[in-house]
Image 1: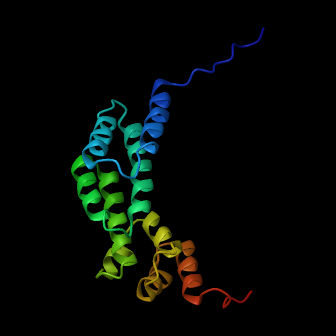
Image 2: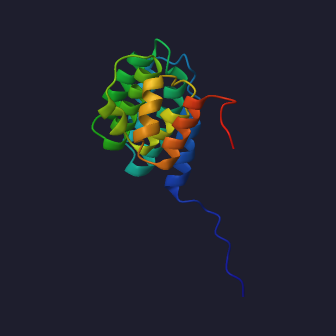
Image 3: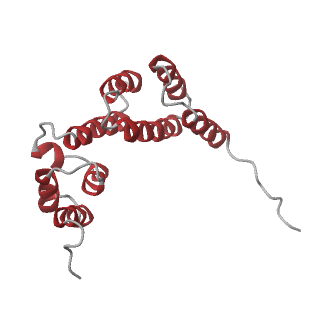
Length: 164
């Protein structure tokens, strides 16, 4: 006797896939109100972790695309209003905003960079958009992980200067 094959996904997996499909289909020129309504609707899902995961994927995609453009501040304010007090999403949006600050060579503090999450430090040390020698030096010296410190050090050394 063989066991029946189970190929039904849990309903939250299907909803997650559908949410990603809808959010990935959001054109870059979508109206803020439409994007806000989509995100707010997803965040009302009964499965909080799944909904926040889908919204985080959207936040990552949109933030990366808008990062150094003039539309980022308004988009970030809109997203902040929609995500409300969800700690993970609030922190991730705040760190995307900090990444933008560093990338645009606007004022930041050492405490902001050293107190940021591992995700932020990895992203900042590896992202080509971050070119601040001060930020890279700080991460090379005080990054939380060896991976961050090494990546920032390589960025400071520049291409072709590394010896093996």
